[in-house]
Image (cartoon, rainbow, N blue to C red):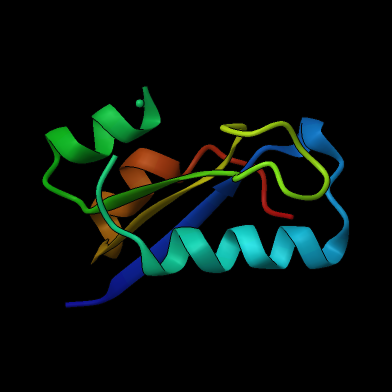
Length: 86
Protein backbone atom coordinates (compact mmCIF):
# COMPACT_ATOMS: atom_id res chain seq x y z
CA UNK A 1 0.00 0.00 0.00
CA UNK A 2 1.35 3.46 -0.94
CA UNK A 3 1.27 6.14 1.81
CA UNK A 4 1.32 9.92 1.44
CA UNK A 5 1.59 13.10 3.54
CA UNK A 6 0.31 16.46 2.26
CA UNK A 7 0.91 19.84 3.93
CA UNK A 8 -1.69 22.46 2.93
CA UNK A 9 -0.22 25.97 3.37
CA UNK A 10 -2.16 29.25 3.35
CA UNK A 11 -0.95 31.22 0.32
CA UNK A 12 -2.57 34.48 1.45
CA UNK A 13 -0.06 35.00 4.27
CA UNK A 14 2.98 35.68 2.03
CA UNK A 15 5.36 34.00 4.48
CA UNK A 16 9.11 34.28 4.06
CA UNK A 17 10.72 31.06 2.80
CA UNK A 18 12.23 30.38 6.22
CA UNK A 19 8.97 30.90 8.06
CA UNK A 20 7.16 28.74 5.51
CA UNK A 21 9.70 25.95 5.97
CA UNK A 22 9.31 26.02 9.74
CA UNK A 23 5.52 25.96 9.58
CA UNK A 24 5.53 23.07 7.11
CA UNK A 25 7.93 21.19 9.37
CA UNK A 26 5.58 21.71 12.31
CA UNK A 27 2.64 20.35 10.32
CA UNK A 28 4.68 17.38 9.22
CA UNK A 29 5.64 16.39 12.73
CA UNK A 30 2.42 17.11 14.60
CA UNK A 31 -0.65 14.97 14.23
CA UNK A 32 -4.14 15.74 15.50
CA UNK A 33 -6.65 18.97 14.89
CA UNK A 34 -11.02 22.14 11.10
CA UNK A 35 -13.39 21.59 6.96
CA UNK A 36 -10.31 19.90 5.36
CA UNK A 37 -9.24 18.60 8.74
CA UNK A 38 -12.71 17.32 9.57
CA UNK A 39 -12.86 15.48 6.23
CA UNK A 40 -9.48 13.87 6.86
CA UNK A 41 -10.50 12.83 10.35
CA UNK A 42 -13.78 11.37 9.11
CA UNK A 43 -11.67 9.17 6.82
CA UNK A 44 -9.40 8.19 9.75
CA UNK A 45 -6.36 10.06 8.38
CA UNK A 46 -4.10 11.82 10.93
CA UNK A 47 -3.95 15.63 10.79
CA UNK A 48 -1.86 18.41 12.32
CA UNK A 49 -3.04 22.03 12.43
CA UNK A 50 -0.22 24.56 12.86
CA UNK A 51 -0.93 27.83 14.68
CA UNK A 52 1.87 30.39 14.87
CA UNK A 53 3.13 31.55 18.28
CA UNK A 54 3.31 35.15 17.05
CA UNK A 55 6.95 35.78 17.89
CA UNK A 56 8.08 36.97 14.42
CA UNK A 57 5.98 37.63 11.30
CA UNK A 58 2.39 36.81 12.29
CA UNK A 59 -0.11 37.51 15.07
CA UNK A 60 -0.31 34.78 17.74
CA UNK A 61 -2.64 31.92 16.87
CA UNK A 62 -2.57 32.48 13.09
CA UNK A 63 -3.33 29.15 11.41
CA UNK A 64 -0.61 28.67 8.79
CA UNK A 65 -0.95 25.12 7.49
CA UNK A 66 -2.49 21.70 7.96
CA UNK A 67 -0.72 18.39 7.68
CA UNK A 68 -2.85 15.56 6.30
CA UNK A 69 -1.48 12.05 6.74
CA UNK A 70 0.51 10.04 6.57
CA UNK A 71 -2.12 7.70 5.27
CA UNK A 72 -3.00 5.64 2.23
CA UNK A 73 -2.30 7.79 -0.85
CA UNK A 74 -5.74 7.14 -2.36
CA UNK A 75 -7.48 8.38 0.79
CA UNK A 76 -5.18 11.41 1.27
CA UNK A 77 -5.85 12.32 -2.39
CA UNK A 78 -9.61 12.30 -1.68
CA UNK A 79 -8.98 14.96 0.97
CA UNK A 80 -6.29 17.07 -0.72
CA UNK A 81 -6.24 16.12 -4.41
CA UNK A 82 -7.95 19.35 -5.55
CA UNK A 83 -5.37 21.61 -3.86
CA UNK A 84 -2.77 23.56 -5.87
CA UNK A 85 0.86 22.50 -5.43
CA UNK A 86 3.40 25.17 -4.43
